Image (cartoon, rainbow, N blue to C red; front, side):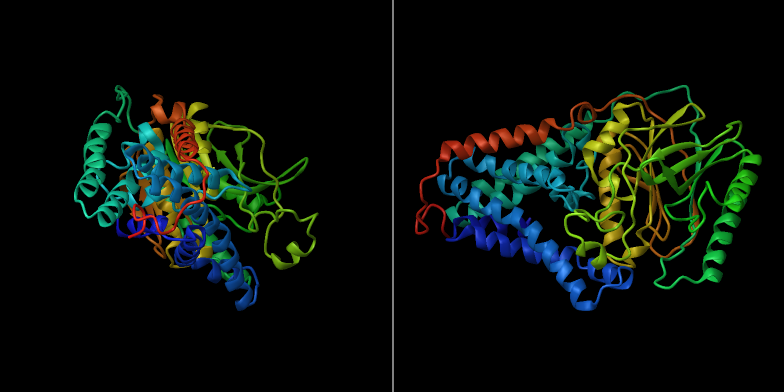
Length: 470
């Protein structure tokens, strides 16, 4: 609440764009500091280039904060209730823009700060993470306005609105329960196989054998084994008979296996998730749709040929152009590989297509024991709650988690832990309001903010106006 209040107070100052840009720059450099470790350790960049990469990304993302303070200053100085109510809507509109512009980066939405607040996750089945972002900003807005006006009413109102809406919305967010079915049995295997800057075949072999041993120990008929992203690396399903034989052994025991592997398609290599199951002649395959820029491909590589030389460790994958669900034991698995789970609309599309359970596999070992794996987990919790689906998260070094349809974590394996997580789930076919129209709240917020900005006008603002300058 304090950090948003400080941001709102910048709206009444002169040169609000510069102040907002500085605010965003510092905030993003602090929250994304793990990028330096990743690009220098695994991307083979010099230390100063890693710092420069963080600075440039934080500067780009800080532009959104600068744009918010520049546009929002007009609403702040007008100061009436509709204009002030449009300020969180403006923030939501810019979060939505950030989620789509260029390659999209909906990381660390304002809503994620409320991930452990009671009722914040369940209400996202109605309004999504973007709607929760709106509510999360209201207490800070009220506090800032009370500071300026020297009145307590704005702060009370900023607290009262979320306090009323959260429990009421969450109360009706559960949807109908589907009875008459037994939970499905899944096991999430976390081998704790770290990414290594230098390839060591002995360590890689030991990691793979440890994965197999844990899988054999829990493989039972009717059980789904979920392997994390890169768990079978460097083996590839199409070219390595050893991997096929090992998975075949597990299938022979009656369990199904979700395994991440590269797949050679006509137009290039795809990052894929295979479902190998008993009685199936060939594995089912899901191909990743939203790739990680500078991780799985290099944007503008042809137009700017120096970029691939800077991102030497980046892959050369191509994205899929459609949704594929994986069918197992009467359930339809909606898969999200790593980065894909942070995109609210894309996960909602899986559920609209018929997914009864969500599975995300990831390799967060690139980030080490930093804030990144936990930031990533926060996004996954919102995807489960938005769509009222069980979500199984398999991370190669953590955090693996069994996430309930209300977003609550019902079991986890933390960073740098090795283990197997028992993850029974009950598939669902109902559609949450948010799943049906994930665009609705951010679209309404954008229209409301645009209308209030047009109402405020574009006249030059007086920085000495006492209505907005504390």
